[in-house]
Length: 366
Image (cartoon, rainbow, N blue to C red; front, side, top):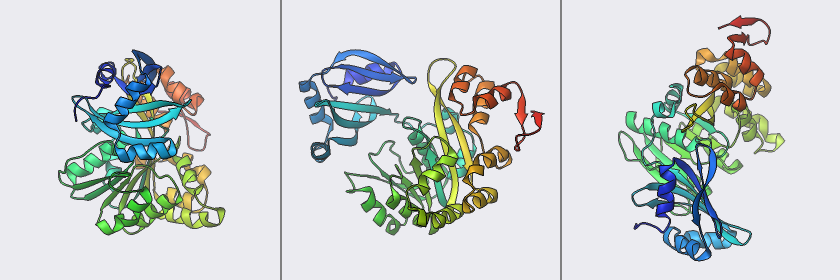
């Protein structure tokens, strides 16, 4: 594909470390770098937006946009790399949001993620949720896990994405990537047929609704590893989010199935590095140990956070423990950690070397 008319704007943003660009017809282009928005000295107009749409949006995608007012897609910019995009209307004018997808899948070390993430990726079956708010780096972590499987294991991996972000080349594994709207009409259609395609690993770009989750659960129950994302802010909330997809009368059976088939929940947040350049994830990790499985089956979900705190020996991690490690390693500042913490008072004590036992009673030093 030849360079688009947006090439120089994208290049300028990448030079400044941008992750996202926001275009609005008749307004200055904004970009996000290191979590903060700034402006690029360039104003779009309708003619520019129409030309850009002609260059990067397929006829089928354009029909979707005209029909519902939004469309997600991805495109390659020559010399720069791959971008995920959303075209939409705002105040009757064209608008577009872009995210830069780095060509090379980052390693665990480059992402500063704990080793247990790769151990989770090596699971032979079950469901793994990678969760966090929009922009928390879920896709990047998922790509790291897929590449680890690809590089170390002989597996048939099928991804279902809307749109495809990272692209992979076969190493030890065979990888098929299906783009919703291009390779298949919908998530539902792709999921309906995926179990007949002999997969070992199924990757879902997003668990959007009850139907998607039910299919994922069937896949896990029949011996497949399913990796999928959810928009939740902590690991225990992810279980509640899934249950909320179902009517009250069905939740007992869903909980019992989750207790058996859940492998792990990886929840993450992105924080500014102490250097002021770049972002780093802090993570909360729930592993489905026998204790956790019983809590889920017995509907004692309010005890899951305590189980994570007590599960260090099983390689579980709380957000505060992750934040503490990042501060101690000099990766982030104490102020940044306290702002990101769901329990800043506890973290403040931890930073002073004071820790409560899992019953909230005796104070012990660590």
